[in-house]
Amino acid sequence: MLTPIHTDHAPAAIGPYAQAVSAGGFLFTAGQIALDPATMTVVPGDVVPQTERVLANLGAVLAQAGCSWADVVKTTVFLQDMADFPRFNEVYARALGDARPARSTVQVAGLPRGVLVEVEAVAKLP
Image (cartoon, rainbow, N blue to C red; front, side):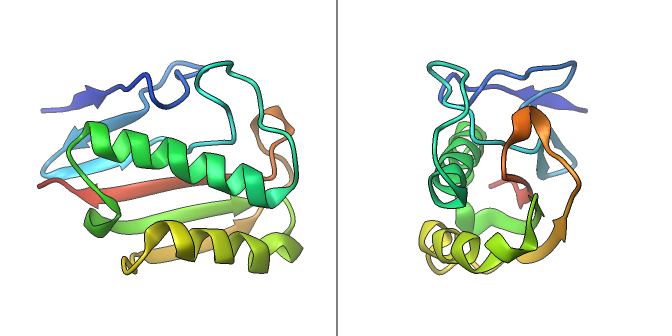
């Protein structure tokens, strides 16, 4: 059974998809970008504030499903510029604390709304 997950503490989907779907004991999130859920506008600034917003959005989706970063088994990171990786990584490490999920990071030609970073996750449901 597939169960869509929604929270008002993360941006509403801007297309025909769910913020996350639970299936088979796992949570699969959509990629989160640096949209402020209250205004649905991109947060200003470089990769640091954008990453903080992305991870806050993703954390809200995880929480809605009863998960935390400790439950995340895999993240996929999309960066517009791999030169931003060190600064992204500092924010990511702070946000995840002791959690150390597997991770892939790729540079992409472009992201929705011109943002600099997008992150998606797979978590084990409690």
